[in-house]
Length: 310
Image (cartoon, rainbow, N blue to C red; front, top):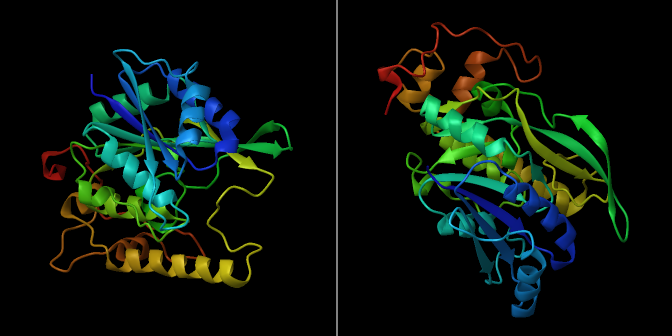
């Protein structure tokens, strides 16, 4: 059995209760072996020791479960969320790779489903879905009020190329296929850092959305505004300017990232002498960004054929 490596970002030592809930959902996975990589943001030695002690009753290591705690100590970038993903990825083994933020959870069968799908499809990355749970935050505790549905609409790769609808813990990668250079997160990004990576990976390697109707976990939308959501709603000043800069960077990524022949075939696109970009694919399948009307591909895709293999 290949090892699943899960990178968990954690930046605030005051959020231990949420971290414990997150780790409990990981320890409860039916899949083994499992490697939990807890990536901390500039914790002091005392905070590291306190964090380790707080989770010791939940994460009990054995031959099939191991824990690595790594600490990002550089002063820049100030918001190190992307750097934490890079640090955790470097710590992981070259087998299966997944991500989970400290304030979200997975269902017990999540990794069994994802690893089985990778094994069956031979895809470099497989996608599923997670539900959104509304979480009311109080001074001393938080209260989950109920699920409110999927965070974004989308079902397949073309939808993903148009807009991100796949939260960080809804997918798994096979590092035996995906190169280290593609698994780098842009440390200047505080939003859309995972989407930028997904665009690069999914433009080059075969992806699978066969589990997209399966919910494998919860994404907690918190009422205190502490979630980072890529939207301009309610933003102003520097925050709005930053959002617009990231939006522009993502648009540049779509315009400049070339689709591999493997992905062209998977999408049912005829091979051409001209290089196709992600933006070309979006324009081909949709009549326009506003209408959302998708046209049909010219030929039926066959992602498992020998022609689709790299």
